[in-house]
Image 1: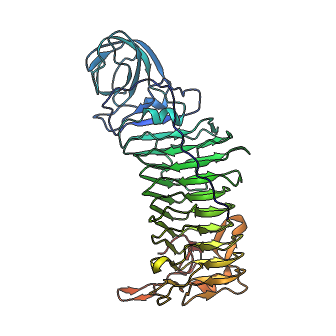
Image 2: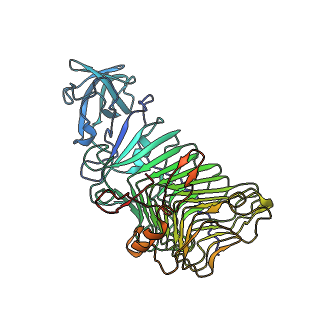
Image 3: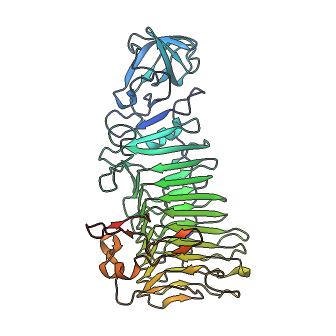
Length: 492
């Protein structure tokens, strides 16, 4: 197995106007690549102010030269402050005695606006309202934990030639929208519109989570658009990253990574997202790494591994939990090459590991001082070229439920057999049954033959607190109520 050299994070060095202190943490920053987007616009709106007005970051920008201020209060004939004004952002760019930077309108009385901070004493010029033009400019605008960057899906990709680095605040969010903020909160995957941020620049890292921040990305597509891109879509050197409803689409270059978790003590959650066509879909450099992949996430066609590492530093752990996730057509679903003395943890539940070109799960660490306790339950391991699950050393203690918790899985068509140094009681052998409706087409609902053998065969079944009837695999069959069976995503 080739070891991928860890990409170095780059810093965004963008020239941008200064910012006044004290913008509310509830400010949202608007980004669009239509004609209204510009780095010098006001660019934001705060819906939490008393009596908020109209979100004019969605409207045309307005240039002004007549903002007359005395401290926190200003008037302007051009801007004609009124009921629509509170919550909107002005960018003051010039004027004697004026504090340049962005300022937020809190209230309006008559034609006088009161701002979040003092703009000074004088007549000021600048631009009010309108959206910013790039994700990078919005990150530069973020100046308080809790602020949201809204990126519009216009149907035209956002092409970047230099990487975007997070704002280094405690936490913030980057969310997609189509017409108005939060309009895709309940939109299905099939009908969703993804703003596509893409690059064909060699060596670029599309987005880097800064060292002191936690970031949530929701509804974005990050794409390596050409043949020369050779780094990562997301690099997490910060405190945490949550990826929701996103696509990370590579260009089938072996040296690329969907998410590179290169910092220490990092937590990454991947929810309902698709990561495909990278060298590694998910990659760990060093440090204590917590990965959670769940809620229908689809990790596929990554040439080295769905998730893998480069050999952790001694004393650091690698922890991966997969729940209701699909890992298909990767080099490995999971490949751990670490020689760390710390325990490693792989926890697969109600997931799929299928059609790997090598083993499904390969844990080269094996049992280090018998510390590793991996768990494989209610999952389907099918069509992997090597073993379904393998590790180099067998556990010296008891196997099965209390030693190596693996039970109630389904296996079939694994080239080297189901397990090496793993024991899994109560498994279902699929034999000639292909368990998926159409894996090549991305449909992993249970086939007709799989429903017959996997329905109600999952763990735990009968317990001291009650009895359940889960199916093996991520998709649960619906109880017959007169209309026949139909697949459902999660346990009911």
